[in-house]
Image (cartoon, rainbow, N blue to C red):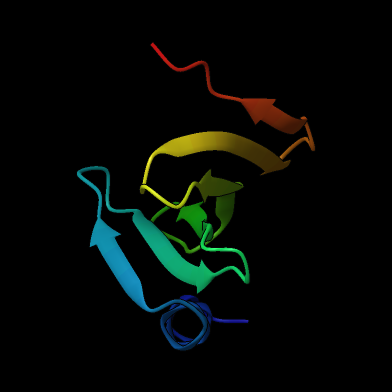
Length: 84
């Protein structure tokens, strides 16, 4: 698949994007949960649109990041964020 086709597919799947200084991109997708919590899916790609990192951020009902689930390149499971 060409770089442009991968880019178009990522742009359709994710609602927001951020261009990175190295030519890559960071894509975001926000999903509302049933109990007031939100999930944010984040995909980081290089300049060739190859996936470098994919993870999920979980935010509580106050909008505070409480958990991160790294899924790619290695599934590290859920990691709770300690509140200060």
